[in-house]
Image 1 (cartoon, one colour):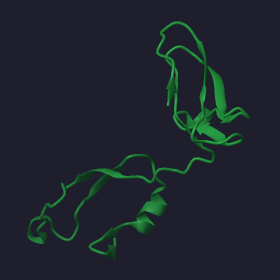
Image 2: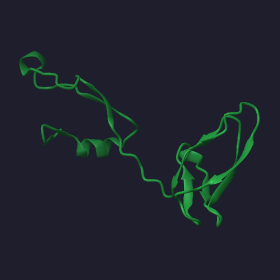
Image 3: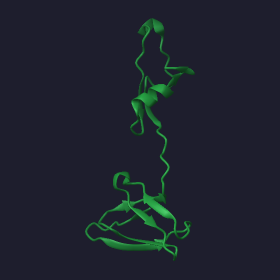
Image 4: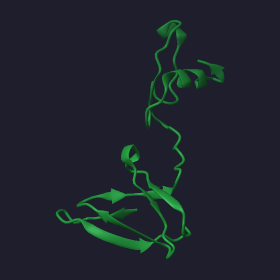
Length: 116
């Protein structure tokens, strides 16, 4: 993590890139759509200009995607759904930490070990 906490002035920063060796390519994962890529210098350092209140998180390039996580479920976990109360169809809603391709999700989804 590197950040400029000054609200009005850009700041030049230079810092040790340890534990990454010289020549390692790094990418900012906070701004995936316009990610800045840097290479660790021969002296083992990184340098860049940070705009006011700008923050970056660097990882080795290419960054590995973070798998999605379920952040909400309706009905809630451990709920009991009785067929006598709902009939043959039950609506289950899942909210994930980030967007997914619906076709991939449907192909992977299992309820009690069976395809949903």
